[in-house]
Image 1: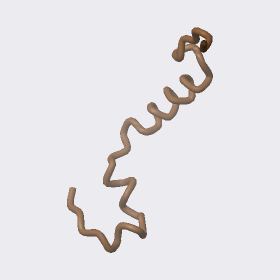
Image 2 (image 1 turned 180 degrees about the vertical axis):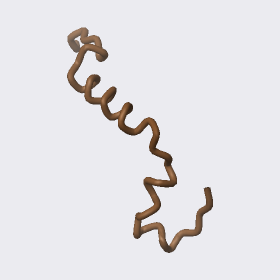
Image 3 (image 1 turned 180 degrees about the horizontal axis):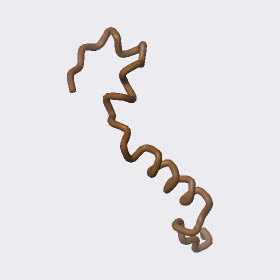
Image 4 (image 1 turned 120 degrees about the vertical axis):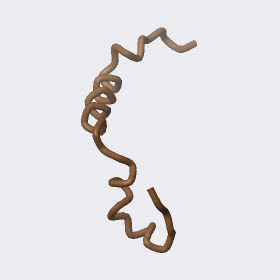
Length: 45
């Protein structure tokens, strides 16, 4: 059986909160803007 761990009290959770704060204002289209794999695919935002 697994130990009872509150995920909100882990270092991974803290890292997730930091990442969420950094990515809060990033738009999905900006993440794909310079992706060379998508140059062959047509998409619109």
